[in-house]
Amino acid sequence: MNAPFATVLRNASESISDHAPLIDPFGREISYVRVSVTDRCDFRCVYCMSEDMNFLPKQDLLSLEELDRLCSAFVARGTRKLRITGGEPLVRRNIMSLFRSLARHLDSGALNELTVTTNGSQLARHANELASCGVRRINVSLDTRDPDKFRAVTRWGDLNQVLAGIDAAQAAGLAVKINMVALKGVNDDEILPMLRWAHGRGMDLTLIEVMPLGAIETERTSQYLPLTEVEAALRQELTMRPLTYSTGGPARYLEVIETGGRLGLITPLTHNFCESCNRVRVTCTGTLYMCLGQEDAADLRTPLRASASDALLNEAIVAAIARKPKGHDFIIDREHDTPAVPRHMSVTGG
Ligand SMILES: C[S@@+](CC[C@H](N)C(=O)[O-])C[C@H]1O[C@@H](n2cnc3c(N)ncnc32)[C@H](O)[C@@H]1O
Ligand code: SF4
Image 1 (cartoon, rainbow, N blue to C red):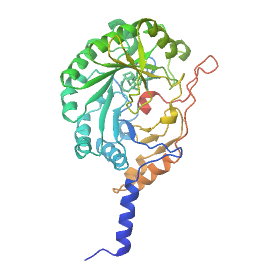
Image 2: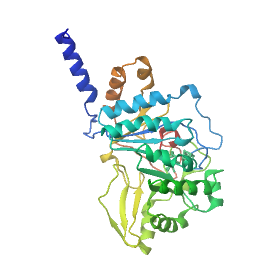
Image 3: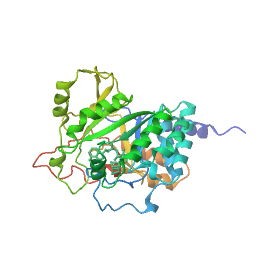
Image 4: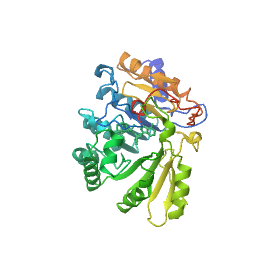
């Protein structure tokens, strides 16, 4: 029997609105979602976490199936790029099952890119499987190649484990980009050697300014190294040309003529990048943050758990995107040494 006309109409309008692209009030289309799958980590980087972090109780976390549903709801509404992050995403138990199931969106062509940001500690055992799930590029965070400094910055990390992870990733055919947070008095002298090392291995390097997120033991002003200074110093040694290349993120890219490699600069403090922001972030508890630097957030876990259909979830997502702010206003100076937002990067997902 044919379905009543009203039902057909409702189903049609539901499926159209469930698939309509997400456009914020400033006309920016949201096509990039970063999903933090855990707030836990096997490191405690000094700029990211305090030494005695309180982690969330496990029952507050979305299950891997719920994370899949949530990611898939975004993909249905035009998300083209998903980045799995954390905390350290590769320490979450059975995390590969999430990559395996999300791979179907790459196969269908709905998703352009599935990627991950990792500290590299568990990469050696996961690199091959990531590649077989359709992951093509990954970001590995590495602030120093000095084993003692590495241990000090991460509080107890083993540099060799990360280097072995990078080797495994490259051997598996993954393109690796190195993320390095520029830390005054800690790794400023290593930026040029890191660039030469990364480019020598065919890896891009992105430098990140330390951002005022979450309470930590050290004063932010003592860590903050403006990338304008770094860029000026690098220009004494290297010839660099601006590139129009973009990964859909906030990095500004330069081509380094001497090495043929790319240098990315993420400068939330010295250079505001909000006007082209196409991204949102979801935490491991299903909280949607529309801006890394603002407190406003939407609870997606309640609508997700309230029904097996995605209608409530979709409504909550649309309402949240309608509140995406124009931008952030991070400042670090002597008068502003407290966090701009109280949550750590490891909560929101870097
Ligand atoms: C929060 S981590 C999560 C993924 C993974 N654990 C890692 O380290 O790559 C993501 C990125 O955020 C960076 N990060 C963490 N806290 C930061 C801060 N306060 N300012 C700038 N970058 C930060 C890290 O260096 C890392 O590159
Ligand atoms: S930056 Fe990444 S590796 Fe370091 S403590 Fe934060 S989440 Fe862990």
